[in-house]
Image 1 (tube, one colour):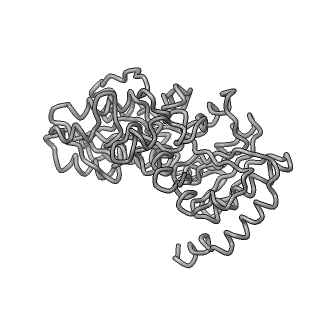
Image 2: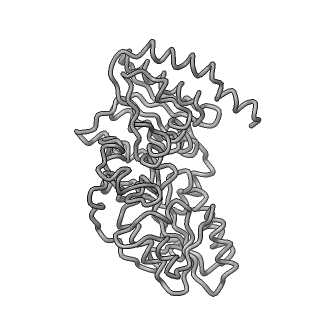
Image 3: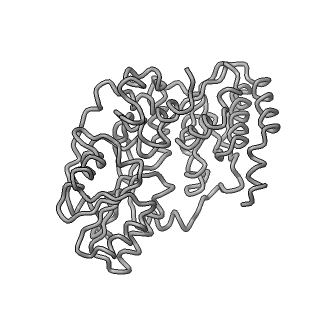
Length: 363
C-alpha cells in the first residue's frame, strides 16, 4: 500500500466533509461502541471526538486483549515465571499488568527470565536457541493473533521442538458482543466492529449476533476517514431505523474472511468457555489447544492454578470495558492509577481506554 493511498484516508478536507454530514444527520442522542482498542486510540489521536455533535457518545469496548485477560490468568502467568528453568515469552503490554500480588515485570526484576517478543515465532526461536530451558509463550489476543500462534505450534511439532509451549489465553470477539447485549444494563445503539478481526473471520461471523439483536453494526478500518465513514453509516441506520451489518473496510475485509488463517486456527485450537475481565465467563469465547497438540499446551504441562480472583479494589476497568463507565468516573484514575504506576490493565496497554484517555483526553 503506497503512502499516497494511505494519505487519502487521512485527508482533512474529506474528514471535515464527513463530520459535517454526521452533524447534519444526527438528531437522536446515541451511544456507539468501538469494540477495538486500536479504534479507541485512533479516534483519540485523530481528534474525531471533537468533530462529532453532542448527540453522539463514543464508548470503548472489550477490544483490548490485554485488558480483558482475567485476573486469574495474570496470576497464572506470574506463577509460570517463577518456575525453574523456564523462559516466559510475552508481548510487551502484558509485562506490566498487575496481578493479585505481583506482575511479570516485578518477577523479572526479582530474577525470573521474562522476555518481550513480537510474535510467537520469536518465542519458538528462543526455544531452539535455549534447548536447556522450557520456553512458554503467553498466547493472549483475539482472532487476529490466534492463526499465527496456531501456525507456530504446528511448526514446533513439525520441527520436533520439545521445549516450547503456549499458555492458551486467546479469545474470540462475537460471543463477547452477545454477552454485552444480553446484559439489561447495556445501553448501546450501534457497534463499530474491529476491522482486523473481521479480516480473519469475515463478516459472516458477525451474522448470528446481528440477527439476534438487530442492532446497527459496521466493520471499520483504522484511519480517520474509515472511522468517520463508519460513524456516519451508523448514524444513518439509527436515524432511519434500518439496522444493517455493513462492511466499511472492503479493501481488506471480505464476507468469508481468510480461509487459510481460519483453517490453521481451527486445526490447532478448539472453542471453549473463557473468563473475561469485566464480562465474567462467556460461553464458547475462548480458544484452547486441541488434544492432538497437547505436548505444546502449557496448561497441561505446568498445570498452573487459575484462581478466581476479585478485581482490584476501586479499579473500574471491568466497567470501562463494558461501556458502563468512562475512565474519569473511576475513583483511581489519575490519582492512584497512572501510566507510570498502573493499577489495572486499562492503564497499562497501549490499546487500553484509560491509557488513551490519559494521553489524549483533556478534561
